Length: 120
Image (cartoon, rainbow, N blue to C red):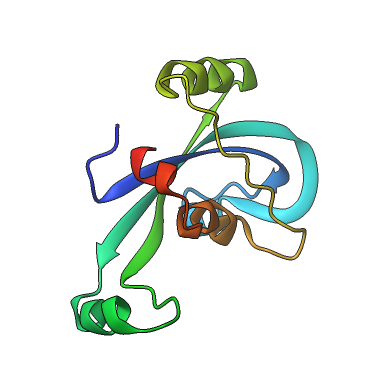
């Protein structure tokens, strides 16, 4: 499912659906019933920062991430997908705070500098 320039991030949320098809506003900030699915996040290299990112003594992002799509699934199906795709690795569970918007919550796990994220 991943093409090298995008990643799928599994999610479970209690945020309300807004009725919008736009991924950035698909879920609102109010509470609702529990929902699950996949966020599709594209990774776009930012060539201007590659040299700086390689030489800086601190983290400099060298790509821009964008939430492209949301696909809702049954929670049970999501668990089966994780089990099939994990290749016996432990999945990463990222829990974002209440003050983070849903789109940022989908992008945030991909910023965690864990070697196993390259294999998601």
